[in-house]
Image 1 (cartoon, rainbow over the protein chains, first blue to last red):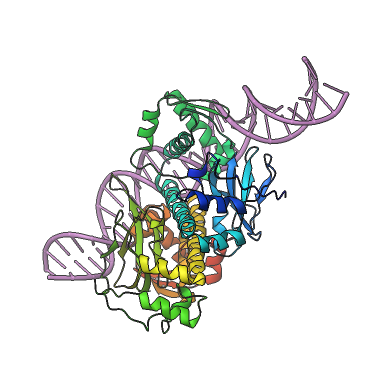
Image 2 (image 1 turned 180 degrees about the vertical axis):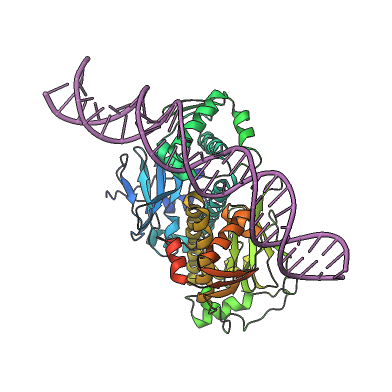
Amino acid sequence: MDHTSSSSYCIECRLANFCLPYGLEASEIGQLAAIIKNKRPLQVGEFLYLQGDQCLSLFAIKSGSFRSYVSNSEGMEQIIGFYLPGALMGLDSFQSGHFTCSTVALETSAVCVLPLNLLNELCAQIPRLQLQITRILGKEIAADHDKIILLAHRSAQEKIATFLLMLSLRYVALGFSDTQFNLSMRRQDIANFLGLTIETVSRQLTDLAKDGVVTIKQRDVQIKDLSLLKALVGHCLPSIL
Amino acid sequence: MDHTSSSSYCIECRLANFCLPYGLEASEIGQLAAIIKNKRPLQVGEFLYLQGDQCLSLFAIKSGSFRSYVSNSEGMEQIIGFYLPGALMGLDSFQSGHFTCSTVALETSAVCVLPLNLLNELCAQIPRLQLQITRILGKEIAADHDKIILLAHRSAQEKIATFLLMLSLRYVALGFSDTQFNLSMRRQDIANFLGLTIETVSRQLTDLAKDGVVTIKQRDVQIKDLSLLKALVGHCLPSIL
DNA sequence: CGTAGTTTTGATGTCAGTCAAAATGTGTGG
DNA sequence: CCACACATTTTGACTGACATCAAAACTACG
């Protein structure tokens, strides 16, 4: 790991308002930036951390994307979430100090490393930072609740539609197009995440294309009728990512 | 709400080690106990808080049990969790300051009220308390992950078996019997929580009884073969409650 | 004892899973 | 640049687990 400390971090980062610095004052952001360590970019399939590893740092995504999954003794895996730029990863370790899931890069990705000991010291000094971390933890819990709703009581079609809509909402919030984006995950990952099989995912995507809701060429998604997509999702707009 | 302040709280509470005071020193527990407010016991069906309410306090369960659920604009509900003595409720509000779910008593239940403003002040003074809250938040996230795994990739039988086993484990941890307990929730609640229908829950319970795993008379559960139950759950022992 | 709520049981239907194979895409070495 | 191997995705036929619909049995409570 490359440990270049870099005090200009955060202040000039376009993701600052979607990340830890949100709500902090300029001087506080500077203090936060000072503890951030660098790490060389990760390639597709490279692990950020493994389930069971001791958690010494949290990680914020600068670019790229990740998937987190839990695996049990029999090698069965369940994807817990996908993470896009601005997301904070590693919060699941707060109970035991060890990561409860493994996290792997879906594409070439860059992260900021936040050493826990330094972060904790800083939290004690900056109440607003502690508050922001607590807020992010609360957000994670609320997002997990939305995942539970999706998994428990939605059809395959609704699951897929919700998944696409959430990506769209996340990308537009990050300043990208909400009608055209690339899936960084495989069908297998989507299926596992949504509690479906890969064949069902494929068929539902085909159906959505037939109905004129989207156009899909491999990883490339074009949303043709966003309002129809929203109608399919219906009622609530869960924040599953 | 009855606001009797009670400084002997926590210190003599048999649940202290399953609750917020865990890991604190005696003097710190005293400080924590000093901010706890009383509230008259809740009856079956009484709400502790409603989705959307501003969160001014967290709640710890002294006795009884609760269910939390999210409802959407169409009145559809999803139960997010059941809470037993020692559990801390209201953490889902940390993102926005408002509760994201409604919480209702399943039986006559008593709670400790922890005013957020006082709790936050105390956290700033007692780092160990802040740490413990963070730990509990991490635990909540890890438990939600287990729920996600259960909902996504388990059969009806595995879901029911896991549900019963978790109740058993929780009750034994609290000093009760692990082979005989009462379900405080209706079949409908279990079904909703597990993403099943009430009929499927009923049939699976009947099957478990036929196989000699349990005996069930209405709400009364007797586990006849705990090791068989564990075998049905298999691999991981998720902490879904 | 009667009404309403809850749970169980039975008959039938369907959505998504499974199995299998074809089609498409991706990477590597010659 | 092509050929080959391998991974991923799509499509089709069939199956099965759970949902749905319907009604009976059981509980509780005034």
